[in-house]
Length: 123
Image (cartoon, rainbow, N blue to C red; front, side):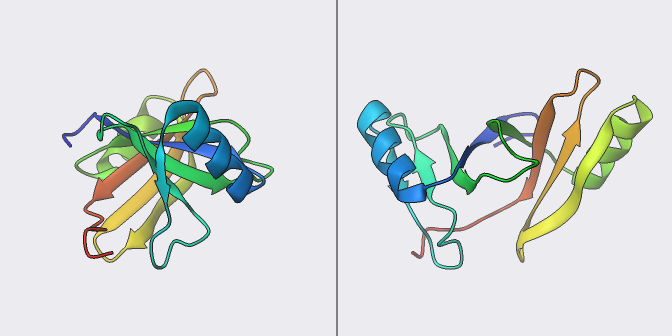
């Protein structure tokens, strides 16, 4: 994916098994877990392009969140703050080669950021 592409949509859920059955039945999504991410089932739409995760719902995460791929999370967050946005979750590792962060825009929307490569092909 290129800088600026929406790469991922997280859906907050309270019961992962129930959500897996629901979304796979409603939309035909393929939903799998990967080693090291057992508490975070990943979904893939039938187009094999759209995807995301069924993330644990928490007090600060109650609505679906789109994640945008960027070349540099640090540079993107610097631009966000310079333009009046707020960093909600700073750059944090997913794997040794990938990172994520979250910011809030000027209208209160939370947007995720993704940088790197997450290889799940070996699973």
